[in-house]
Structure formats: C-alpha cells, structure tokens
Length: 98
Image 1 (tube, rainbow, N blue to C red):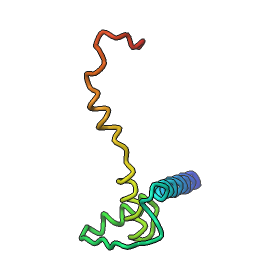
Image 2: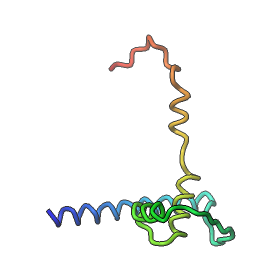
Image 3: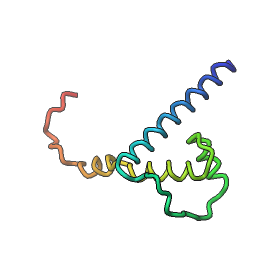
C-alpha cells in the first residue's frame, strides 16, 4: 500500500512538472517569457496560500510560482465563456441522435 501511495505521489509530481514545462514553453513561444526579467511584482498574501500553491504546482521558489501562475492566466482560453454564449443557439427541434 505504501509503495502505491509513493508511486501515485511520484506520478502526480511528474505530471505537474510536465504540465509546468509545457505552459512555460508555450508562454515563451508567444513572447510572454524572455530572457529579461524587467518587472518587479510585490504584494501581501497569506503564507498558507503560497505554500499550498507551491506544493500543488511542485515548484520551490516564489519566482517560479509567479511565472507559472501568470503564464497560465495569460494563456487561459475563453472556452467557458464562449460555451455559455452559445446557450439557446441550437434549435430545439434538431435531432442530435442522442
């Protein structure tokens, strides 16, 4: 049982690290991340929030966390909003084959 939990935790970490890498690569590809770090960001947030976010994202530093979080937000698609806008756009008498 302990080996299964350890394996699941390792797998979760691998998935998170792969996802993080892909997000950062995509952010670089569209010009959001480059070599220059020319802006400083500061603010006050609960340490518990930072610790939980770092743990979930499997990152160690505040900078890594900020780059990842901001990249995810900047790259986020608007699928949900577009889906909601379509509500009622399909005629009720159409045969969906369901």
